[in-house]
Image 1 (tube, rainbow, N blue to C red):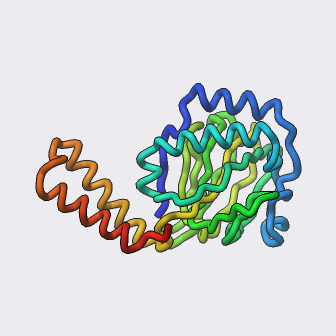
Image 2 (tube, rainbow, N blue to C red):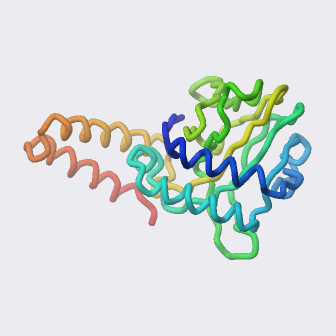
Length: 227
């Protein structure tokens, strides 16, 4: 399942992020690459332990914590602290699949990468190219979102970033370990949750069918979750 999550950050939050990133010290993006990715990757990145990366990453995780669409789609158990990258002057990232396990530098914190996320931080009109291209069972998708919007997709997908031929593409990227490992089970739970939310919005929160569907949702989550 691929999910567009709009307005994870407000316009004001995006502006603060961009201001901070413009003052940051960037390094070669291959600092966090695996062997396969290193051969395909040309971009810049903030160091994982850079104070500005930690501060902006904390702000993004705070925003995600109160985003109901993100929770419904991802059912997050662990979120790898967001990283930040910059593409300009032809920078690109060739086709690759993300590592199955990510470990936070200098710690024993590990995440099984069930889902990948890219949070766009630059106005799409300010740069050419830079589309995220994702290939999976849902076909090939080209993604270039408004600043503050995020795309969530299976980390097992083959994906790439097309060359940026004008301007600068800024983004945060990270991975999520879900409480529900199986993608098809997560999709069932997502569809069921959205149906319950729609019923509740129509004033049927305490109606017997809504209560029964809510019970089904939690019983399935109880069956499928790994916490």
